[in-house]
Length: 530
Image (cartoon, rainbow, N blue to C red; front, side, top):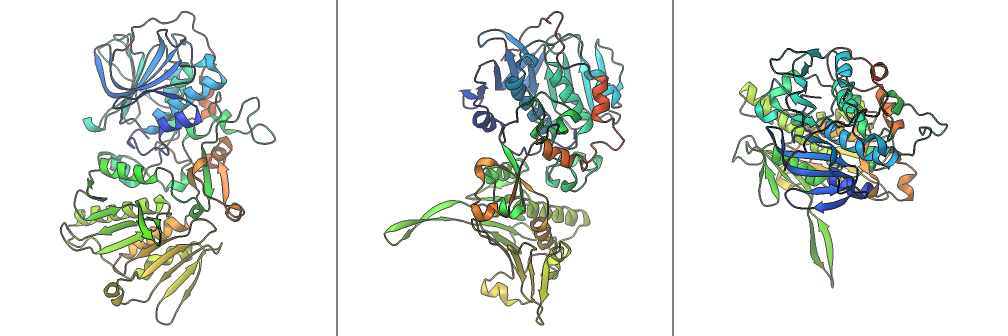
């Protein structure tokens, strides 16, 4: 996970805090600030000073005994930090504020067990001329430091052995609660990260091991009930699967199966646009073009058009296209209705980017060889869809639930001349019919990527307030809250974060001290300055 880059989080953290936990916006603009309802927790963005270290463009989480008192502790996160760490620490703090405020609204004891947790996972101590304790991962990629020469900063996790643009760090004050130190340590040594292939930094692509996303469960912070950690949080203890004595966490996220019932997420378009722009895509008038000029994307936009005496609201479709080189004519195009889940578009773009990368490495001038389009639909047959082939070569497929169908016409150059798509993938349901149209010159490899994504049996994650399911839909769709039970089912499929075996969470828990340990004497430190 430490080499996976920041990635794209499944929801916007600030919106999540305001909508699910009733946090208020204390300051907006370039450097926003949010406060908890009790005004004792604050999350803010800006530049901060920790001793002689300047933390630029960081997010800082602070806690206070009362709204106007001095801070108890603080934690800062660099923007390149994997979102599993930043979201995990923030949400763990927020959830504990509701169920066990004493565990986060107090200074912890001077001693902590983070170093023991890291040592149990194979981290090694490293000699250093300056005072303090330092540890690194077995591969030397990430280090943790307890810096005695900077009393303001008790513990920091830093990315090493990488380019300066990819480095990240988490800095924590001496008063940071033990539970948050333990969460950061166990997340680093035990969790993998779910990423799109294009999100993995190129500098790290050959230094990580990957597995299909369906074999990796959601990250720990999406579901454990507040106040529990490790395997205790993953094990349902009551007859209804709820943890005994603990209230259920807010059901902010749900898993929807089958995935064609999930529809697009509320912020799917914005998140995709932001990701592509961060990867160097160039923004135009309603379109994005890759840095090399060979891929393009247009997203659904809302508009009105006259209809009789009134106006009709319409939406432009998704449009993805590719060219053999910058300035050349469009070689292929895929068009999708606005209700297509954005994961389908993500997968198509990722596969097209890989084709370009492979063509560049091989020195090929034709990165998008069309091939036989119908071969791209074979993944549907492999997924158990019924199929039929006509004597002229047209192929049709239907999903087991009868709600998805696909048709690929016979090879015919007239499709392009007539402006008609050569293939379609259609979804029909009570609410939300959508369709994907594929041009005849689309490479069969891209069609296969679309088909694999559509036929994937794994669920899609959505927010509860963005589900459009009527009674007919709910008789078919399975909507499961992303809770501890969901994580329990996925825990056996979680991909390893490192190549060697790591101690289990239960083993780590035996090393860890009790979470409620009180400080014998509060540590004193000066507050970081804006």
